[in-house]
Image 1 (cartoon, rainbow, N blue to C red):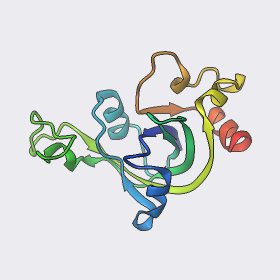
Image 2: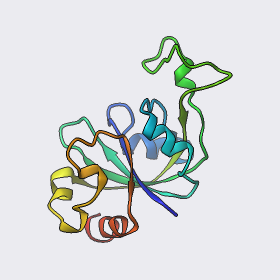
Image 3: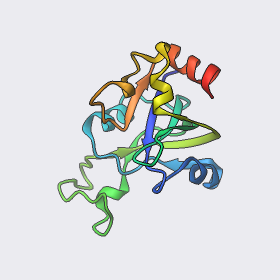
Image 4: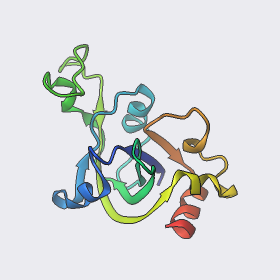
Length: 152
């Protein structure tokens, strides 16, 4: 089992939205970064743990727990000409972008990024490194246990 931190803008899909979705399953669509796409396509597996992270909001931070609920498949938003994630370079016979489904497990207290940065045990966490802007980052087993055991 692996662990991931997955960022979403809460005005697009919050932890509350994910918990309210049928069977609590939400497609993680709209990812347009090759490294994050490759993470969903290659190492991510059904059952992996997810820290559900609200970003680009008044107080960014971990807002809940989820798990990967499906393998990767083509992201249909890349073909929607009227949508904000349309990619004219992507072809149906050779899609460029993928998504996975995420099953929301529970809402937690918000753990702001400033609080995460204050813990020595999380000093090497990829998401907390200066300049990191990836929407999906790996979380080590030790980081996962620390966050889920001490902070949530």
